Image 1 (cartoon, rainbow, N blue to C red):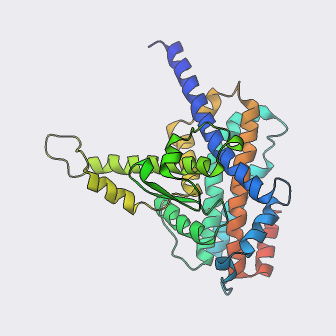
Image 2: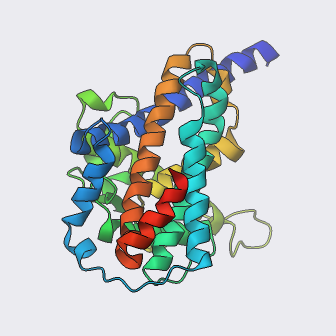
Image 3: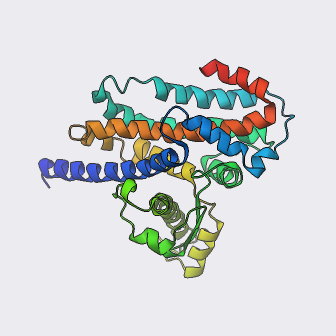
Length: 310
């Protein structure tokens, strides 16, 4: 294949991949704005929503602020701050390069504050990303407001997926286009599509690894039984927004690090909008997690801690 043909294929594939991720992030941003507003009051409205939930109100204080909690929170908030101050609106030509690193920043902003929230709750800190995502799923389903309490479990096929805090089904999600504008679609189905494709990816990785275990001599892999697939799907944690952020981070870092650059000429305006929407999702998650920390360490201490990042 000629290099020009390869370039054309890569460019087309990159554009499709970008539009898919843009649509998924737009679905989260659309639902956040619908539930909490699109103006400066959005994050205050998220705080108010959390404070009306039973599980948040039940949280008792008494957690002493220590260096480990400060360290996790600081790392997350500084990463978020870097996202907020980047001059994307002043020079949209920066958007493709900025978006190359944005998934990494988004994940680690939530990761840092998420670890701090887990510490505040007295939980044992997860040591790896997979265990962090599993712990985050438990935290999200228990404490976070819509749409961040949405989860996807089950399998191994999409039609067998079950959704928590979303009004949709596996079959509806299977038929949903991943390029649809969420403004004109069933938003729960759009969010379900994001979580379902993420869960599919995780299950594929588990199956791939299992096929290489206990392989008979002379073979490179083995076929999995239906029961083995069911067992793997049953043991996989609820997939939530953090799994999607991690999926974006891996693809941006390792799998296709140049997809944003391929489509830069035609999609500068969309890249700018995507930056803002992913920033909104990240900040909304950080805001929600911060409320958990505040409930455990107290308003006075939390105000002082947050004051370092204003």
